[in-house]
Length: 196
Image 1 (cartoon, rainbow, N blue to C red):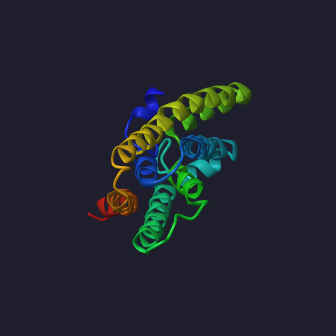
Image 2 (tube, one colour):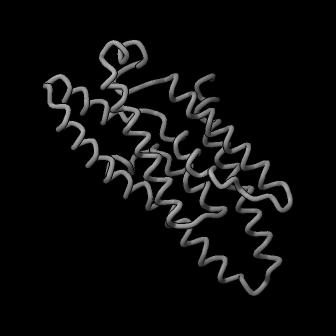
C-alpha cells in the first residue's frame, strides 16, 4: 500500500477521469485493472526470460519504450475524452475507463520485477507470484482510495447545488472538460520532459 502512495501508479489519471463522472464500483474495477496490468506486465517480463529483460529494459525495473507508449496512450485517450466532453450531448465511451486504466498501468512495476527476478533466480516462482499478488492487493487498496474519494466528494458537491439544474449541468460539463484536459496533461508532461 505504501509503495502505491508514492508518485505514479495512475492515481492522478484515475482521479482526473472519475472527477467528471463515474461510479465507485467502476473506479474500484479500474484501479484493480490498472494495478493488475502494472504488476502483470512485470511478471510477464520476468517470466519470459532474462534475455528479453536485458534487451527491453533500460535498467532494473525500467522499460523506457513501454513507458513512452503508455504515456502516449494516456494522451490519446485524454484527447478523445476532451473531444467528447466539448461536444453537446456527448457521453463518455462506456469502455474508456478500463482502457485508460490499462494504458496507465502498462509500465512494469519495478518492485514486482525485482521480486520475480529474485524468485526466478532461486527457482521459487510460486512464492514470487504469491508475494506479487499480495503486493498488488495492497496497491489496489491504496490506488482505489483516490478515485473513490473523488467520486464521493463530487457526489456530495453536486447534491449541494442540485437545486439549480443549470449550474449543476454547467459544473458537470466543466468537470468533464477539466478532467479530460488533466488526462492529456498527465500524459504530455512526461513526454515533453523527455525531449527537453
